[in-house]
Image (cartoon, rainbow, N blue to C red; front, side, top):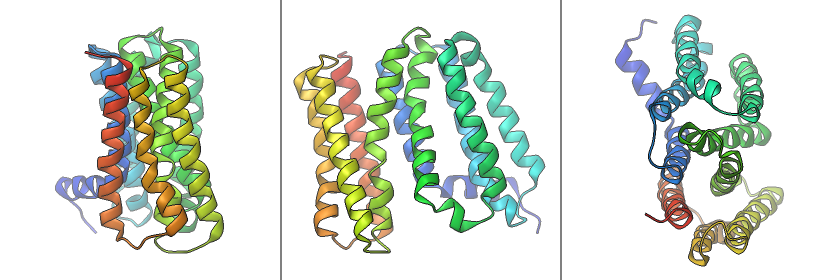
Length: 251
């Protein structure tokens, strides 16, 4: 089946969740480390190219795109990330060493929908995309490793409850509800502790209110459509990430 570049872009953009996590996380880190540098732009391009390769891997296994195209995205992404790898400290390279094997395994195993829908795989994917908050910080401030790690943790806490919450739309397993409640409470606690430790003023902890909807969903399991839930989570998490950035670094 012959496909066009326009069709490739349509497939890439169809994964709204990927871009919501990646760009929200990166945007939060960008504001924390403002002003950006030329390495910041290269990092954004690199992360986006790698994410596009991840999306197209599913189509590759269906025979819609070639391995060569997916490989081209990965090579372009790696090249764009090279300036950051050269400028940032060794721990960043180690973080990349974690992400690279995940991508290699994902490209090989993503032909199985049952594998890609595992909770562990989805959590790993969201967690790795949340690291882009820290990468954005390091792209402007190569030595701010502590700030980068904390930014990634706080941003990851915003998105991780969305994994079991989306699953609850299709199943009512009690384990999913407990997982949703646990990740929501831990996320809210992370914001409170960050404010209590002095990383941001007290009102920055208000970002923890973003988890109230997750807690309610875990307790009551309200009925909503997948599209409606995706929109809610995107707007909510983007707002909480903006509040976090503004509280952490007032302009």
